[in-house]
Image (cartoon, rainbow, N blue to C red; front, side, top):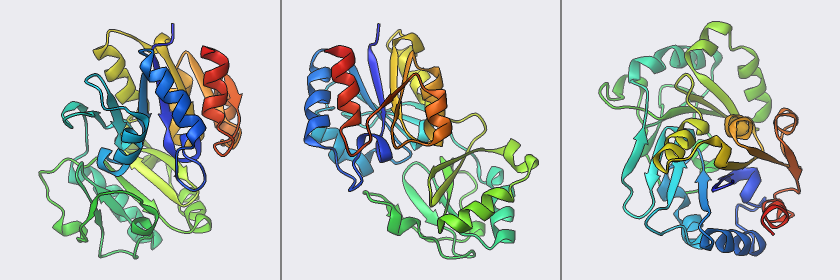
Length: 267
């Protein structure tokens, strides 16, 4: 029995203009009122998506959000942490050396703010990022040693990102979980970190497992939850390998694809 619906944002729940349509809002609010858990799953912090949480009414006592691509599970009402996992500064050194050699930019995120590295190429990430989070420019040397970092992001023109991605060798791939979440964004997470990690912790908290999960996604960083969920729903606009991994293809993010399938499944 499906008891939880997990939703990626960009390219899935959000339209191309980064909003939740009235059609999707209405269906998700109705589903939430029946007792099905509606869980937003994002690479961003909760403050950056709070307007979506409020729009969907996900502010009840048992509402949670998966943030930082699975590294942090947050209780919506009081922002308390259910599960959290990050990387130390030294774990980021191989990535820093790689992007420096490539002439690429790098933004490092802890669980509160973003650090655009000033000793590298200027990043586009701040212009791409829409949400409430502080950007604090620092060099790699200035990053705190004791802090835990949720992820690092390389944000550049898609053609340049293609080149950087092609240059990643097997040794570097072993050190990170690397996902191309958008054409201009490549994310570097701790090994084995994934949205599915946060979802597993949340399902366990409620006494459930992946047989109780339906997940919606479109991109590489959604593959884990798409393949683990009892029902993995992929948007028509999704990446081809994600479509191949899912159970169901629904309409695009601009056609209320989420609402289309939820209405069909739940009636």
